[in-house]
Image (cartoon, rainbow, N blue to C red):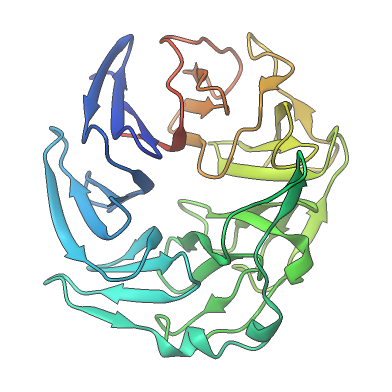
Length: 314
């Protein structure tokens, strides 16, 4: 069986494919973000801020569409790709590359109360713009979810034509993730804690028990567990990754088995990835941690890859 490849996207140094201890760079000096499987063994990504591109299994890149908008993330449903923007709009891209702005998203209830995330660091106002930070679709394609920072998780059940708000915008959501085989299960990482939904993202509960701090920024489904990162805030010098069973109760537990108790800076949005028994996570200093046994044991197989914007396992 071939060794899985971990794709490490970066904010300005292209993408690194990591297979075992072998690292290969692609798209050098470009911004790559928003990695997402296309359902056909290939990977979608936002390249250079304005291009929706597709990566083949052998590392060849093709531009699908180019936009005037600053693109941030994407999710496919069937033959279409839904793309979020840094100014909080959603585009639908057809197989031929034609784009349509989904005006229903522009009038979602409560949009006038959305605001950009920010914090004062060393006397300076810092933080990302108001925009769509992540997107997800339930495995049956029936529900589309857009994580607005800061604006909650608007939800559509008609392919993006109309949208309804779901979670309190002040939960400050950083990533939304749908279960790969169960359309009822959706999770989100938020400044309020780990958010869980068992009705396809229509309603949410928030879990904090076991976390050293509630500011959660990345989340992913493993085969049996949920993995989530937490820190004191977005600019914390250290963070941690926790797990809990998908089914069951009890507090979140910090990872062991070779994973440090504290990561160097936070594990940010999209920086935890899973596939079958494999789990990967990368922290703010570029340390890539890999597990081949559902997170029981961990190794750090390569030198740090700094400036990461996301991970994907293919």
